[in-house]
Image (cartoon, rainbow, N blue to C red; front, side, top):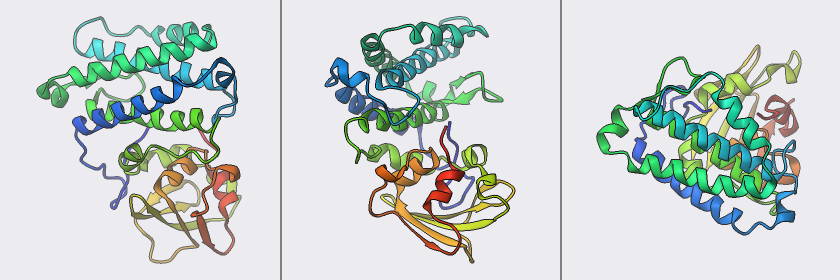
Length: 276
């Protein structure tokens, strides 16, 4: 679900599939440790994704892992290409599972697909192209795993915040994903949330440090750091990722988040980025 931005918006950082695989493993293991401690009552709690309880979040991640493994098998020639109704059939099966089965299934399938990525040899990691069905062309392995990591990182937060209001995104995942949000901004941003108002905002993040801009007019665009800005937004990088994903609600906003400037505040930006 993510594409690039960084010091030069629109250009993807050159991160190898090896690095994405390593951080995907760390992210899976981190969430798996959390899930292993959840009792049945904890699975019923409302997650950070407000329409889902914790078990539904885990079911979503588990079904995604199963679909990802099947797409990988098809790309490797281990099975036929996925049928048009493959994903809906998987989703329906997972939706019908009980809460504990969703949690256990996540643990099993997420680990399994991560192991398949880890087992790929160096040449395959570079040359393989995988048809995900929703992109215009088959994607390289780094792109595929970046999409998986984006889901893991944000939905891990959804699970953790049900028990810890101060939960944050996993730092290694944040360090990679901060440079992969460029093209996504235009799809998930709602410029009409500001009415007829236009704004150009300087964004400065920490951990890691980044400096860039967003323009809100007829659309929402990621740009280079503007020479003149309506406002300046300063925040941790993980909080920026959560803001763009609709997960920086007031009760989950760290004290280091500030916005200075006339005519726009953090609630305005929450409206521009309502979540996905």
